Amino acid sequence: MNMSVLTLQEYEFEKQFNENEAIQWMQENWKKSFLFSALYAAFIFGGRHLMNKRAKFELRTPLVLWSLTLAVFSIFGALRTGAYMVYILMTKGLKQSVCDQSFYNGPISKFWAYAFVLSKAPELGDTIFIILRKQKLIFLHWYHHITVLLYSWYSYKDMVAGGGWFMTMNFSVHALMYSYYALRAAGFRVSRKFAMFITLSQITQMLWTEVKKAAEVASSCCPRVSLQTGRPLLGVQAGSCLLLPWEPLEDAASEGPQSLGSDGSPPT
Image (cartoon, rainbow, N blue to C red; front, side, top):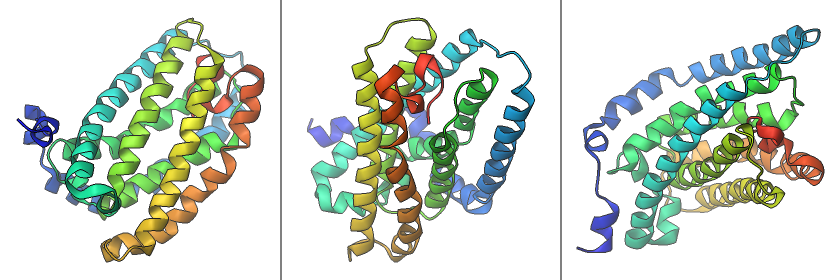
């Protein structure tokens, strides 16, 4: 049995997943991401106002369970999308992987692509813990949550080329991040070097996303709809690239990066 066959072995739920229905639903409902973002922003400002004169909540156990759940989900997502990415690289090469659209309907990846974009809505719940625990909430945290939600839903409906890279890298970074939050929230001591490594992984992910998206826009091999979508998305992700190196690393030097949830708080 060759390597390509090994990497594409599917679980039954992955085989049974109907990606055509998922893509159709997203094409009809992707604009709801703006509603979720607006409600999220309203909660941020309203929640912080309500908590001004209230005692903070500890929420240690709920935070452990929340982070652990997302860690397990992200680990499985990273392993499964990673397997398909290996297959794409082995069979099509690096250049073609940048313009590949098969992540949305390919074996293994079709389920995890949809699970990935949907997860960006409940991940907004990370901020609830920061507000109720009265921790510092930096601009990058909620900017990143909103833009990734909009980016993911908008991209999925058009099956934007190269999405597999973004999904695989984001799953991988989140697998590390949420594992870190779960351990910190549970009271385990984790080396500050690990927190710094996660921050650098975030920066690497965002920079690679920009390079890849620029390559898609410039490449003649990418579908036209991906080029039309890619240009505005370059600007959206560029904002995170510009902000991330300044905000989290400054806090990391003192007590662990705020964007990475010092003392076990949720991520940016």
